[in-house]
Image (cartoon, rainbow, N blue to C red; front, side, top):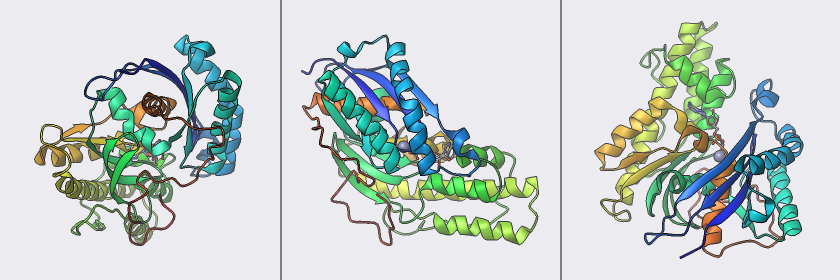
Length: 364
Ligand code: KG4
Ligand code: ZN
C-alpha cells in the first residue's frame, strides 16, 4: 500500500506550456490507483507559431520561459494547494524540442532543490501512455496507439517503465502529415482539426491516394509518400477550389484511417499472446486521437478483434501537465525519482530494446 501523493507536473516539450496538480491515491490490489486532477493549466502557443505554419523551436522555448512561472502559480492556486502539500515535482525531461525541455526541467530542478522535494524526470511518451490509467483506471497490460505531432507508435504498455514497441513511423508522424497537408492546401494551423473540418464536406473516393505499408506484415508506419501524393494531386489541379480541397482532405483522411486501422489490427494480432482475454483494451492517445473519423474506424477494428477502445478526453490527449504529474506520481509510488543531475533528452525511446524501424530517420 502506497500513500496518497500530490504532484506538480510541468510540460514544455513542444508548443504547449502546461502545469497541473494531480493526486494519486493509494495503490489498489490490481496495481491501479484512483487519480484526481486538482488543476490543469495549459497555455497554447498556437498564435505565436501560426504565421510560420508550424512550431518554431526558438520561439517555443522563449514562450515557455515567459509563461511557465505564471502557469505554475495558477495551477497551485486553482488546485488550492500550497507548496508544503506537494510530495514531488515532475517535469518532462524528453523527448521533444530541446530548448523547451530545458526550460521545464530546469524550473522543476530549481523548485525541487528549494523546497527539498523529490524530482521526477518524465518521458513525455510515458505521460501519454499512462493517461488512460488516470482517466479510466486501467490495469496493465494494454495496447496503445500513440498518434501525435511528433510520434506514431504502437506499444504494449506492460507496466510503469515497461514497454514493448511493436511499431513506429519510418518517416513522418501522423499529426505531422496532417499539419503538412493542411499547409499545402492552405487550410490553416494546427492542421489536424483544419483537415478534419474540410473533409466533412469532401468526397473521400475522388482521389485514389496510396495506403503505405497496408498489406505488409508488421506495425511500422510511413506517411511521407501519402503526403507527397496529396501534393502531386493538388499540383495537378492547378488552382484548387474549396470543393477540390475538401475532396483532397477527405481522401487523405480516409487513407490515414485505413493505414492506422490495418497496422493496429496487426498489432492486436501480435498482442494476442501477451494481453489476456478479458483485458483487451486499445488505448488511443496523442493529439490525433481527437479525430472522430479515425476513432470510428479504430472502434470497428477494435471490436472485430475483441478489444474495447479507450480514448481519454481530448484535453488529456493533447499535451498537458496532468499527464506528466500522473506519470510522475506513478513512478514515485514505486519509489522511483531522479537526482538533480538528470539531463534533458531530445530523443528518448520508451522501449530502448526496440529495433529501429527500417529506414527510420531521426524518430524516437
Ligand atoms: O499530442 P499533441 O498535442 O502534441 C504532440 O505531442 O505532438 O498532438 C498535436 C498533433 C498535431 O499534429 C495536430 O495537427 C494533431 O495532433 N491533431 C489532429 C486533430 N487534432 C489535433 N489530427 C487529426 N485530426 C484532429 N482532429
Ligand atoms: Zn505529446
